[in-house]
Amino acid sequence: MNIKRWFGIAILSCVALSPCDAIAQAPQVTRLTAAEAKDHIGEKATVCGKVASARYAGTTRGKPTFLNLDKPYPSQVFTVLIWGENRAKFGAPEEQYRGKQICITGTITEYRKAPEIVVSEPQSIEVQK
Image (tube, rainbow, N blue to C red):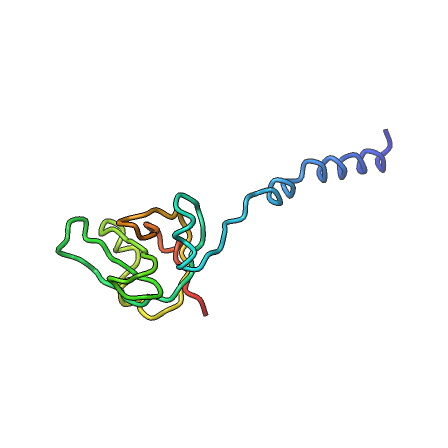
């Protein structure tokens, strides 16, 4: 077999086995507003909104930090929950994110009829410019 033919077969094999097809078929994460999240309980999505209120409940069991989007507690539209065991990874999230436009990626759950995402890693929260 001559070198040109062998090289051509090798190139075609690489193209045919390319992971690009798998990447192109990977499901896209839905991007939602905080208000839309209530209709997507159980789904993985990216939810965006403005942090209207933020609170660290250090004396409460689990030491949660709450970031409430679009409207302050108790009328929040959506909540981001960071449990105390993960808080150190975020610094002081109630200060860092307050008043900022953020997007959170994760699975939307429901707590007391309000949608929320529980995050454990800072990479799950993106501050919008």
